[in-house]
Length: 327
Ligand SMILES: Nc1ncnc2c1ncn2[C@@H]1O[C@H](COP(=O)(O)OP(=O)(O)OP(=O)(O)O)[C@@H](O)[C@H]1O
Image (cartoon, rainbow, N blue to C red):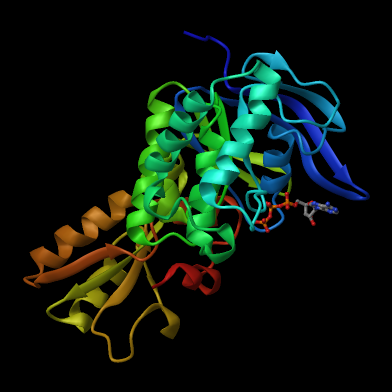
């Protein structure tokens, strides 16, 4: 077993001209987990992924990947695979030809390998990502989701200890997403670290054991998803009862509960209302509604706990902006 984390950053700073894209980032990402990077636009997520992939170098600080210090030179560190801005593959070749070409390149580095071994490896990764049936079609005709899967297959060829992906579910249908998530989870279960960046809170909640929240180039939070959700002081719940007016009155009398108004939060003529408060106050509200002889027909978070934490920690949790999370 390896004791070093998959990623260790200390004081990492990256400038683009006057812009500070990363500002003194300290971060440890353990092996054996899918780790999510989340944050508003321009937070520094892609910049961080680029450093892990050796696409750029830090201006200050130190970076260690799978136990080895990263020098200030461009180039993908040993044991790392992945891509940002889409996988760089040849559109005029088939999926299988692309992957064979990649194993050929690697073969040159690691000594010649038998063509049969390479073919078996290519078949293995094609099967993992569900592209066997279309493996002999040219990429030119591939959809975005198929290209994403092929990019993942290419990354898996090297059995990475650190896999880095930007929005891995882009373009994937629900079945494709499930398959890709299973592959990522299996890789993590085998001891690798998988670092993904995403704006999709549902995906992050489903896939990641830990997340790092970046804002303005700084780490605002890093740790288990459950802990992040708990940091969100207040949650918004849609409350539907047998008597909207009476329940609203009960809510207004319940300590810690605020009734959030705003047409954007509800359907027109909706009997429901939105109650905002910490979990304990919402518990009390439910008890009071039932105690008042009203039937509670629905109680559901308006945004997921992860999204609520994101909004609160990045300072975007006023009612106007939280409507972005309302479906
Ligand atoms: N090549 C570049 N040249 C100049 N500025 C850059 C460059 N790359 C990133 N930046 C700037 O650095 C900051 C961080 O950008 P980055 O792309 O890392 O954010 P992000 O969190 O990935 O955002 P998004 O969610 O929009 O993809 C932004 O202010 C961005 O404009």
